[in-house]
Image (tube, rainbow, N blue to C red):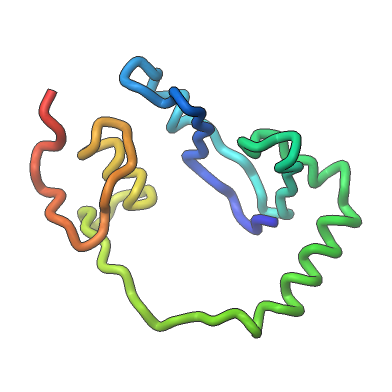
Length: 120
């Protein structure tokens, strides 16, 4: 159950994305999970189809259970030093993928990302 909007969602498969993938296929999709999202991961492994609206009782029960057990989760005090420039308007990992790694995910913390990116 997600509780916010998931932006820059991308669904990958064994052979996608690749060098011929259209950029909008990776970066243009959004899922609005402000009320919670629910996916049938057995039948929808890529989590493309949100079924929360068809299962409101289950979503509410899952949220309640999550809040019940939340205090028992371990939460460390580590901080992550992101290496992206200040003032970007997206997640650092997404910025690095688009601007440094040619559309693929790569390291984005405690790295020197000031270079020109991958060679063509």
